[in-house]
Amino acid sequence: MNKAVFLDRDGVLNKLIYRNEFKEYTPPHSIEEIEIINGVYESLKELLKNGFLLFVISNQPDFAKGKISYEKLNSVCEKFREIMESNGVNINEYYYCLHHPQGIVDGYNINCECRKPGTLFVEDAVKKYNINKNESWFIGDRDTDIKCGKNAKLKTIFIKSGLFNLEKGNDPDFFAVNINEAIKIILNYL
Ligand SMILES: [Mg+2]
Ligand SMILES: [Zn+2]
Image 1 (spheres, helix red, strand yellow):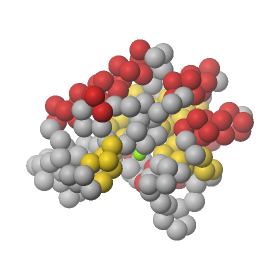
Image 2: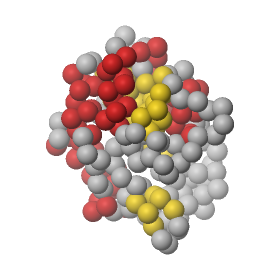
Image 3: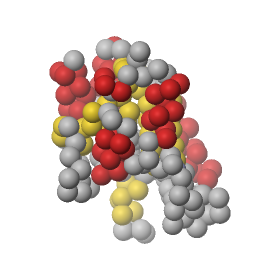
């Protein structure tokens, strides 16, 4: 069986962008806005060296909400993949949920099972890649990431960016200041 690390993308691997327009932090809305967090490539390569498969699981509701075009959203996802590849980071799969229950775009304003904290994507990967959950992790910077990891029975690490809080009772296994520290925790746990 394989072991895996499931990674949230925005705020974990790349920086969030504060947008005055919406008065909130959002993912990059253009390829120019993609800024990879320091140390990400090296840290992820350490996981690969230690035999972990890597997956990105990301909620991307901004198209459903009418805040970005489908083409723009897709171009950011494609560019992100290119950046990882060209820096030697082999992510096995990228799973993006484009839905949002309160969206304004027909077909995307649904209650889906892939939106975190839903575990559909994790379960798909577990089956497809024969993953042992007991040796696998979920890393994220939001309440829904930790809920998703816990729902899927993975070990969880919450990145304390200072931007988002955890709901009471939604306790991760570990806290980290950033992705690099999170990955040190995983490697020390082995
Ligand atoms: Mg995030
Ligand atoms: Zn979805």
